[in-house]
Image (cartoon, rainbow, N blue to C red; front, side):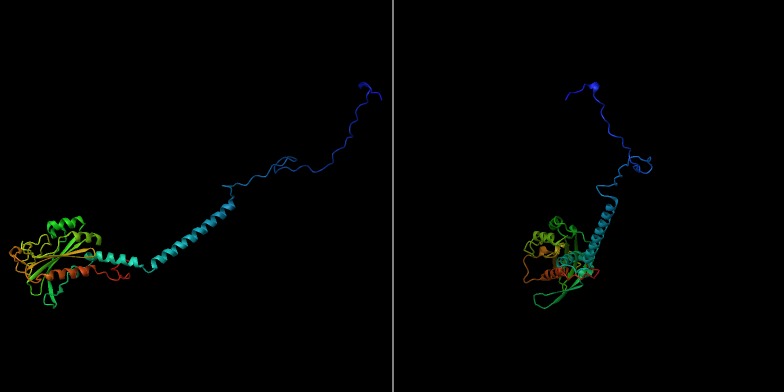
Length: 292
């Protein structure tokens, strides 16, 4: 087989022509020219990966949670307001009521017109109130040595009244010292000097100042006539007393201790007042007098 030179080779054969089949033109996007290529559909708008309807569902769920929480809080508050007080709350209410008595009670209730006491013979007698001191300042009501102790422990007031025994031979001035709480009252009470009567020196200083009332059995009673002193405590109150003879006899005239207990009425009256002020009552939360 011989190869023909290029000039003598036959021309290459082309594939036969085949006309395209008629068909519908490709549809394009709305408004595009007929037969244009289609564009991809737009992506939905999202916020933090959530669509509008999804955010609506989230809002509804959160609103329901808030409503349930609010209802639980309201029910809990209603139950707290209408439940019975606990023992601790009753104790606090009782202590608060005792601490307010010196202001809430009238003076005649703190210092009754008559108070019973028991002298040496053993039968009961009654001491009569001769007057109540309107001034309640702390320092002018006691000697300077005691005033220092009261000031140190935040004395709020000193309420004073004077009594005469049934025979009107002995007069007693009683002073209720008010402190913010029982702890401070107790510390002040422990720092006061011991109670005692005349010891031959003719003095009972430091003590509560005497309060005399003209026209009564206590008119001659002065600081110089003080012959006995006592101290007692109840709750946030320290109750002091100072006693002497109704004739105003100065303590310096007493050279030796008198037999028996001529001034026992002073301690008994002071103790009765201290007990009345500090005795806690069962709280009645329905009464306006209580704060439960």
